Amino acid sequence: MSDTVHGITTGAVARKLGISPSTVRSWERRYGIGPAERADGRHRRWSTADVAMLEEMCRLTASGVPPAEAARAAEGLRSTTGASAGRPTRSVAFAAPRAGPGSGLPLGDVRQECRGLARAAVRLDGPAMDRLLRQVLDAYGTVVAWEEVMAPVLHAVGRKWDASEARYVEVEHLLSWHVSTALRRAGANGRRPLSSAPPVLLACVPAEQHTLPLEALAAALSERGLPTRMFGAAVPAEALTAAVRRSGPAAVALWSQAGATADRALARRVAGTAFGIRGARTPPLVLLAGPGWLSRPPAPGMVRPAGLREAVDAVCRLYEDRARPVDG
Image (tube, rainbow, N blue to C red; front, top):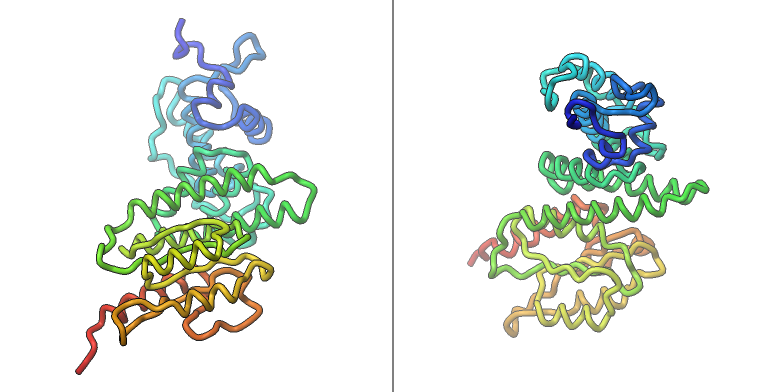
């Protein structure tokens, strides 16, 4: 007899949905989301309708619905579709998502998508993270997706790691990888940049390893059709100044996560490098990005954006000013 008749095992269900078997068992134990029938009285065998119910559970929790509420909706779906039904339809009504706990992370009052991403991250559910990140980027754009979904979850993971003995290193690494992948995908799908426009250089100062905020800036600028050059983590000062001289950028974003890495001499050197014809040379705008620059006010030729939105706005104004014809 085929699996269609007898159903499939918990391990096979987990592989099919891209989640761990322990997550499937936890949902059954906590919320009663289990197979309608069991072989030999003990062994779990999941029918087509059972699998459809779990798919709905995955979809709802990934979108931020609290697990208990998602379980009620998913169980109702199985009751509606019946044991012989195929994939679930989307006509089953359920209550609008409400904010609630469930990830174990200190999130506060956030978007439902933020809670969904947190739950997927804690259970190391890579496929769910990919789906949700793609959805929020498509729906809201990079700035909102970063500031209201990605960054809050990343910060919550960091706080959880610092404040407890729970080992969230694996959560942070996997979440960071999927966020980076989603941002690069969004950047690659942005508008085609003008080939004649000078680029924006993005680099971490020497000894600085945090690249995700710069990746978010690169994706947001690409959405607006602005050319970028990403140099990544811990760029040596000599390499950065050489890149600035060779490319003649309109702006240079320097990321510093901590005051100990904020290289102000490097920032001044970059801000003092001018390009163009003699008598009309133009230096790049230097964006002092990140909390490492907060101890002192920015020097001439520099701005210190408070977040991604301010950084994007500053760069866009710069390009608009350059494109505006000079009177007289």
